[in-house]
Amino acid sequence: MKVILFGASGMVGAGVLRECLLDPTVEQVLSVGRRPLGRSDPKLRELCLPDVADLSGVEDRLGGYDACFFCLGVSSAGMSEAEYRRVTHDLTLSVAGTLARRNPSMTFVYVSGVGTDSSEKGRSMWARVKGQTENDLLRLPFKATFMFRPGIIRPKHGIRSRTRIYRVLYVVLLPVVLLAAAIVPNSITTTESVGRAMIRVARHGFATAWLYSRDINRLAAESG
Image (cartoon, rainbow, N blue to C red; front, side):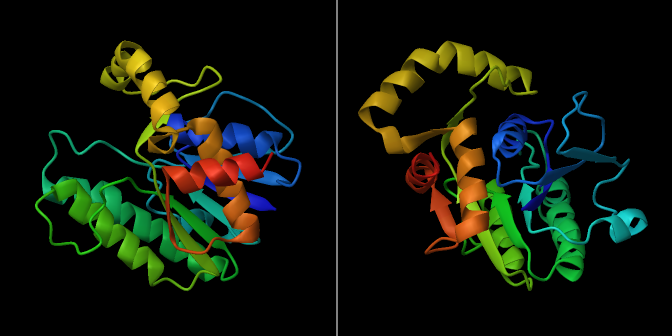
């Protein structure tokens, strides 16, 4: 399986990249981002672009892939709805539209979030925008499209968030997170589980287009 990965420099994307490089069923990973990852692996290829929303100059290099794991995302804190829509909805659909043309048999996996509003009419701005993004992705002619809606994601294997406030919160709240994981395990997942579950749904599919932490954890466990 050949995979295109967006967002490998972020916390979730770094976890997904790790699992892809470790998985023997993944033949190649093409990371698309704004800056080099600073690592090397026989499976890893990189495309560094000033604007990842504009793939017109590299479109001929994006064919022949089986799956796209789209892990790009930003916090909506301090952003207007128009700004958040541009970097969340518009960028994602621009990328996905290009990939759908080049790879009609591709499986597209999008990292969304628990609480996403599929009606696009709720009071929460980020949830409406994520909901519209999901809905528009589902209309594209991919072989299959899946929305990962995790709640809390615990980083593993030394992976850290690039956002300082998130790094602080992970340290401060770690005891609470670990306790919640023990009491209500399906409310929390990990970067490792997200990566393993993405590979599994790309290879075998899933019963629904929307996967929550409990689904992610189960698929990760089944992947061994």
